[in-house]
Image: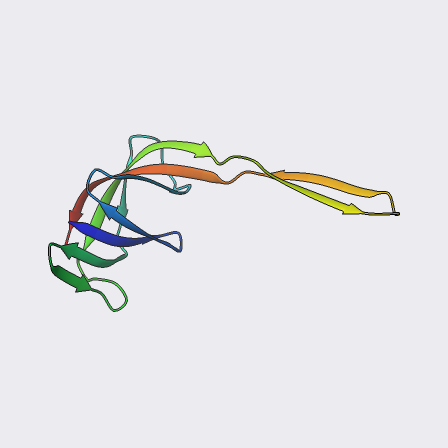
Length: 103
């Protein structure tokens, strides 16, 4: 079974035992999180669409680990004005494993 879920405003297509990454969710590694906003489920040729979400459907997720993305370097420069500025940014992310999908 495949489900399309929404977590923190982003949509993901997931299957059972799949590991995917998303913006950091609250909890420690090993904790379970429920994704109650299931937009659609696909089982074989059968498609269930929600308008906008399915009633009673849920996906149980397990937090595998927390991490940070690679650093993005931002450099600002203005010629002839001696203006230089370097900044870096890293997103905090979580890796989640799909434990079960219930429609």
